Length: 125
Image (cartoon, rainbow, N blue to C red):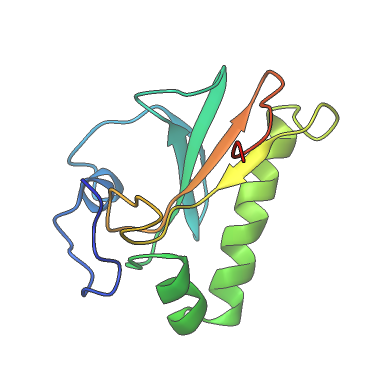
């Protein structure tokens, strides 16, 4: 069910629990700024979620409150995961959902990294 991304951060969300080690995941990459892991319901041959280690509800929240070093570290982590997966040549898609209309389901910023096949257009007109 989509969430209201304007609400305060909920430290009981599933990604916060993953960050605390309370829920297992299939880690792809981790550094001081981000954790990347395989999605449990993949929508492409490669479907990785990249989350910041800080408590941010959405891209809007992150871009407004995170420091420049944290933003740079997170963006670099996303790029690192794509490069390590060999996706820079064939291409890939990044997606982040924000709020009700964006159908965001977890109140912790996460970037979906899709690849491994042609992904087609985003939306049919």
